Image (tube, rainbow, N blue to C red; front, side, top):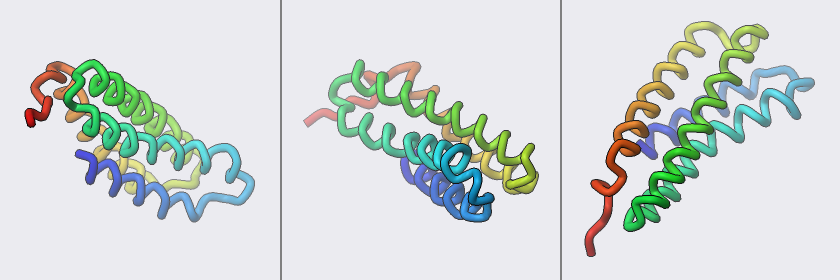
Length: 115
């Protein structure tokens, strides 16, 4: 799941390089920050997986970043910066990550590492 979120963030980075300069401090930065935040929160969650409440908190944060990323992708598509096929591919990938996050949130204790 982390790897998929990371690869999606890298795809977002690549497509965002073609966005207009005037969008750098608004759309582009927000999109990059939120897409990277998904992977970062997943990584932090699994470092804290011995503490189900902390894991759930970070997974919830990742899910929030995912929702935000989807909104920025909609703006990018509707502004004409992102072609519909790329948008659909990214949206499909992020929806799959979202489903995985939902599974974890249903039972965070299941992911506890026993040492």
